[in-house]
Amino acid sequence: NSTQTGGLVGNNDGEIDGCYALGAVTGNDYVGGLVGFNYSPGGAIVNSYATGSVTGNDYVGGLVGGNGKSITDCYSSGAVVTPAASANTGGLAGYTTAIGVVTDSFWNTETSGKNTSVGGTGKTTAEMKQQATFTDWDFTTVWGINSTDNGGYPFLRWQGYVPTAPAGGSNGRRTAQIPVYQASIRAEDGTETAVAVLVNRDGGIASIEEDPWHGMPQGELAVTIPAIPGVDAYALSIPVTDLSTPDAQGMLEISTDQGSVVVPSNMLTGTGQTDGNQARITIGSVDRSDLPEDAAEIIGDRPLLQLRMSIDGRQLDWNNSQAPVRVSIPYAPTTAELEDPEHIVVVYVDGAGNLHSVPNGRYDAETGTVTFTTTHFSHYAVAYVHRTFEDLEAVLWGKKQIEVLASKGIVKGVSQTTFAPEAAITRADFLCLLVRTLGWEGEPEGSFSDVAEDAYYWRETGIAKELGIVSGIGNDRFDPDVAISRQDMMVMTERALGVLNGSAVEGAASDLDRFSDRAQIAGYAVNSIAALVKEGLIEGGNGEMNPRGEATRAETAVFLYRIYNSDQ
Image (cartoon, rainbow, N blue to C red; front, side):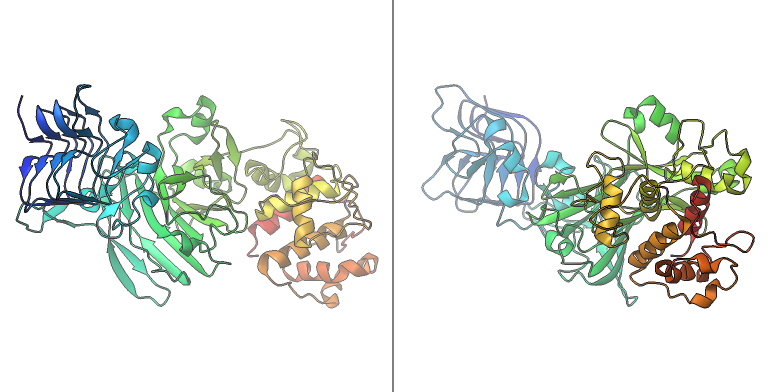
């Protein structure tokens, strides 16, 4: 039956700055989640909040029971419980004197059960978790907000500092705290600066809230966050505008002990997801207990990494084929895996727990990491896959290459047990394999007139057409089901490598002199084949090129294996 009861103090005649209260509060009159009564002349509450439920008879509010001076940049989100006959109750404040002022402060109308207050603005739960609601608040030095910390509500930046050291303080103010952990930002010219790392031990996440580009997303920057005990996820906040440049004007590397990503400054361009102020990229390990049994068996105890992105606390399903992101995951292979490391692969886990191959994933022995590029964020895992087929004994010269590409999801068998290595390969099938080998993703606007939209190769032929790799046979036709000749296979590949590298490799007709059947090469294919020969990607057999012969599935796999492992 007490009066003037608050989660932090009962009555306040001083300044409360940067404080919060979480517990439930029960009293009689003048009951508030943070303060019972905020007195004049000295009572000032700034940059503070309360989340606990508040129960009382009269003069009851989510933040303060009564306000006689000033409340600025504050909020409350707890339930406010009073008798039906109570006349002085509100979502944020129950009562105010004639000189009481409330500025830029809010309460949750849904959780409080109150639609009115003598001061402040009521917002829904969703609105209370959006930075855009708190337009005049200081989210640079005082407040932070994201979908992970504090239930998605705004939090005080000092809350995340772990471990901490006292910095002194007086006059009833909350003591500021000094972060021990710092990240390094290295510019392209080699200069380095240090920035604070905020650590939320309860959430197991560490974050950097300072814009590394400072509004000028140009050149290459490397942000290195140190390993922190008890933390399994790391986040970097960056203005949306820094990730919305017309093209990749800058590259930003974020390195952690969980993994590293290199993101381009046009990451959000063209996605339709640029509404908002602050983007947040999160790298972290994943609880694998929810994985389906078959997926858990394939992944085992190898790394499982989650990449996430949000804007102003709103999670995004990021996907942009025009802005590939490079990813590296630290990995120490077993002794058995090191005997055949080409079968160390990358898979991503979709929302249903299904595994999908990431063809460009591979182990880099020099860096001790598994690397890949992707154009969408998801859960990514390291796996070890050794796929083989029963009918490869007749093509032992291509057995290894077929098995490696099959393990990476680039080539597939004609059944679970057979590959048909000596069968001819169609133009459409070769184009599918070439696009997978080079790691191209995206959804084209169309394809050739003789390629049905439900054909399994529609996407790949459309991508190749848009990039100028293939132009068809005339009249917007491609002849997808016709067996491809060796020379056409080489022409498509040379054009694709030119697009990939931004410039074509120059070959000379003299590079073909060592082939006895060079005269059989069609005029349109001479330069392309010469370029591939010069790069060591074509060897021929018995001094012959056999340009007009049909390419077999085994020959195609060996050829694409060279492309996959080249420096192109």
